[in-house]
Each structure stands twice: as structure tokens, then as C-alpha cells.
Length: 105
Image (tube, rainbow, N blue to C red; front, side, top):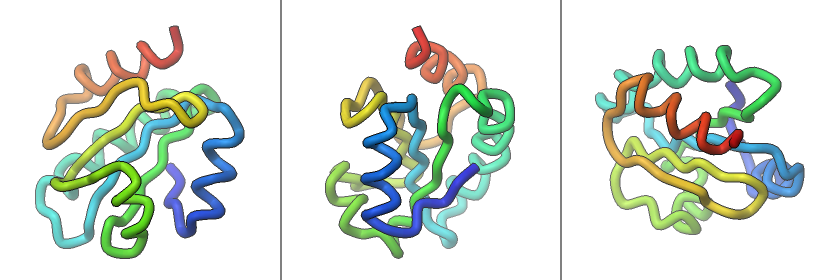
């Protein structure tokens, strides 16, 4: 799993055209920390197919505002610069796996 550290890194990722799952989180957010093992598991499961990235909302406020992130965790599923789906709050691995598989179809 990759952590996005800058706008440039984010823009390069989007420009790659790969399917992407973005996890907007904060270190102080309990639900974000609870969701992390699920996101890490899916990152390994879909390695090479989907780029799974986490974005710290406190460090990357401009990216978070582009996505109008108002609550965390917030997950976005993208191909290129098009958002194909999103999920706010806790989610099971089954729910997230379905959203990832929808990106690949």
C-alpha cells in the first residue's frame, strides 16, 4: 500500500490510468485505524491490478478538499481521473472487494 505524500505524486498516479482505491484517513481517527488491516489485506490481494493508496487528510488537505472529504474514513474508487464509486465510514472486506472488482470489470 502506498501513501500519497504530495499533489504531484497524486497527479502522476491519476495520470497512469490504473484503477485506484484511495483511503482518506487520519492517525487520530479510531475507525480509520480499525479499517487499516482490511485495506492492507485488499492491497496485497489486488497487487498489480489496483493501486491502493492512503491519504492523510491532515497532511494533504488540498487533495482531501478536491474530493470534498467531510468525514473519515472515506474511500474512493477511480479509474484515471473518474470516480467510479465511494464509501464513507467502516466497511467489511466483502463490501470493499465488490467495489474493487467493479473497477476491474
